[in-house]
Amino acid sequence: SQTIHQWPATLVQPVGSPLSLECTVEGTSNPNLYWYRQAAGRGLQLLFYSVGIGQISSEVPQNLSASRPQDRQFILSSKKLLLSDSSFYLCAWSRQEYTEAFFGQGTRLTVV
Amino acid sequence: EDQVTQSPEALRLQEGESSSLNCSYTVSGLRGLFWYRQDPGKGPEFLFTLYSAGEEKEKERLKATLTKKESFLHITAPKPEDSATYLCAVRFKAAGNKLTFGGGTRVLVKP
Image 1: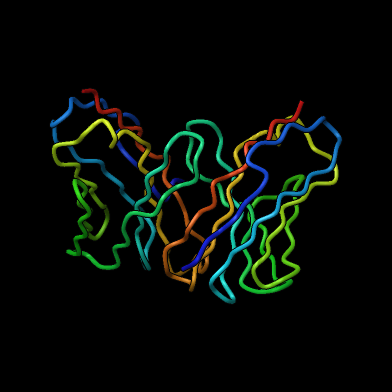
Image 2: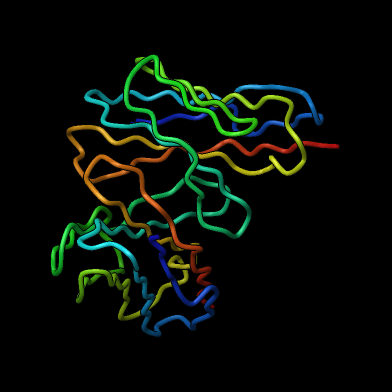
């Protein structure tokens, strides 16, 4: 069976510090990978998606970037965090273009 | 322009009081509509996929239906453990790999 791992679960970082959130998928190959952000009480906003190694599409211009160094690894990064980056970040994967996506448990990021 | 709209935003039910949640979409070329359940502080949990008008899916007390421009999630005789936020998402042809979400409906079932 397929599983998705996302860590850490919670993170408190000072303004101006770097960020690296990692997500890995097991039990499948060549998945589509996604990073979403969710504000409190709101729906999910797509940040980045990837259809293959090194292929990243950005949806929202911002202080964040994503990379896919391996087939089942997706990383969300920032060089300098802003207070406005505080949010709930979710990684997800799907098998094909028009199928359901499966989510990790999320990372609660607080920038102080 | 909102492409996926969920209503109501919040729903308070008594245990056993059946109700329906709505998800309407304005996109063309629908390539799938998906329902998720999300508990506080957790990632969304996949429930159903619907691909064509008239399609229905069931799981325990939940039943999802799809028409040409909206989907309903029916909760029959809900229990307190059905309390959660229910999210609707769509894929459509022009957006390719994107999964676009509605704002969700927060459901609270009181015993």
